[in-house]
Image (cartoon, rainbow, N blue to C red; front, side):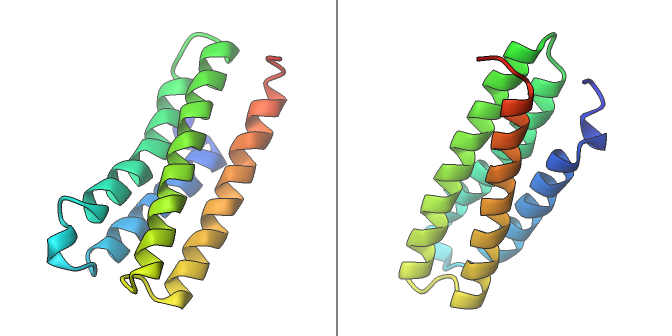
Length: 118
């Protein structure tokens, strides 16, 4: 499992992180240490935890890191919703991010289930 770069889920998470960075560049400057920082950290945490888990020694550890990645995805979702409600993210970008994030969350859940830990 050490070939995390070959995992489709990791690639999708990287793509999402890049999209989040591009969108947060457009947020108001006063959010630099607020939503911008939080959204970028959450977005980077998802592929980072997938990679770290894939580099660990067993399925149980991988499952744990996938759980952390899933938690980060829910944090990001919350931050995206707040940004949209504050009119920092337009509805089109919001809907696109929500769709991509939901797809990624489903992928994480399916991968966790495939590990047959429980």
